[in-house]
Image (cartoon, rainbow, N blue to C red):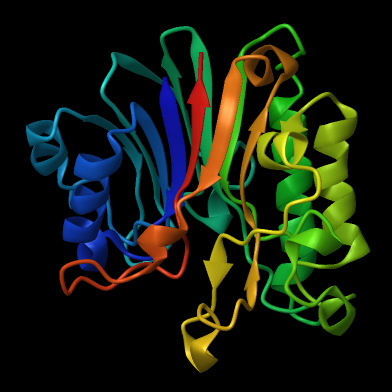
Length: 256
């Protein structure tokens, strides 16, 4: 099984680009984030024509998440309980015995912004929601976490230490998942590899290697035991056939 996560930064603007990627990479299950459209606006028929069913939790102009699946999928949860005011940011599906959740975690904007403590509270709510998934269940939690897990995941940790995505408070929330048994699949497989999944559109950041690894695939031990390989699909951060890419690259994992 090939699973993936991708913040598409607006599905209307990126629909043809996503289709290009689906046809070339052939993933089985995909978590999409930052759709920026409602459930009614989601192009269900377009993806069905490519062999994918859709489970969506959309929102007008902002946020929005979806699961695409080539295998039979059952919707389990739409929205993070108690955090509905922060937008459509979570959807869970069950696919062939795998619990698959994709999230678009709050950005926080800056440590001085009122959204920063709300971001931390959102992560606390996510931790409480996921507490039911013990290390015996095969579960994936993937998406745009808007946190650099560690220094290796930032192009310049020294410059950004203490700033948004790099704070001790944010990393402590992520560490809480690791303490409960969740595994960062990419980092577990490649402990010394510096690779990024997001680059700012401005200042030539992509070509200058100035990125962050904030798009993650977390797995319970049961799911991690099935993962053979994780790849940040950097090639799809580049334009394709005149189509403009998202500022995020897809992240793909291959499971037994």
